[in-house]
Image (cartoon, rainbow, N blue to C red):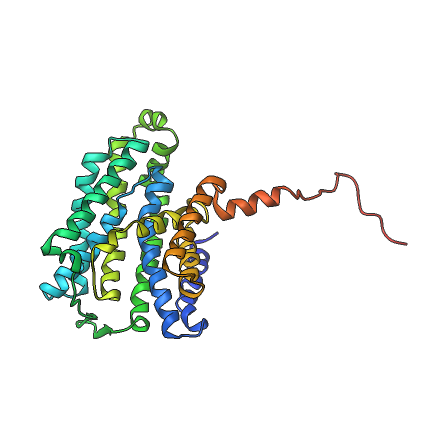
Length: 328
């Protein structure tokens, strides 16, 4: 397949995706849901490359999401910086946190790594709830609307914010796709599948883990950046277990290493919560149950389930040399 045809095949769905909210009616509720789907999908893509490609389960990715949100709130509300500078600040803070966390944890493996990252998330939540600099339990308010004066662009509602959210989603998908085709992505899979082979092939597992972690953190932090503008208020609830379970469910429910898997997973979750809700607590029970069922009974996700069902009905092939008799 030539490069031009590949570009068309990828560009056409990307352009059509922008008009999804309009096709669904274009109401305020639809635009709000679509913006949140884009934000939470970007948040999940950061975790996806850790879980699906590196084979680790990080329970501290809510820290990167919160780092992006809190940095944006502080820089925009207190320092008066615009979205571009607040995004740059969010990425830098996320990289610093990821480097520190990576130095401490990435020599650990499997459940020990997961336990330590979870402990980091608990510590971060406690700090956010009690440190007055971060607003404590009251959170940070007064985040101004998304506005880039240099471009003459402002977004004061979800409909106007949708182009930014959709662009951020496309960038995240492109980054994940490029990562999986890159040398680093191949090294991560080698470390995941066979660490001994990776070492004999000249791949440093520790360096590879750290590099993937440093790529993952800014992706999730950028979601926190836009979430701060969409919500106009940030508190310690961005570190709640809900966001972690949402990320994990989005990564595994459709199937791992599917480029559009996290996006489809988040869409399924939010459609249920926004349009078929049974109440806050029941929705959280449903979300947790979906994660449990996915991990316990659908190791290859929903897509894998369909593939398994298809194997139950093998296609009948005509023996070589035989032909279908003609009707008289």
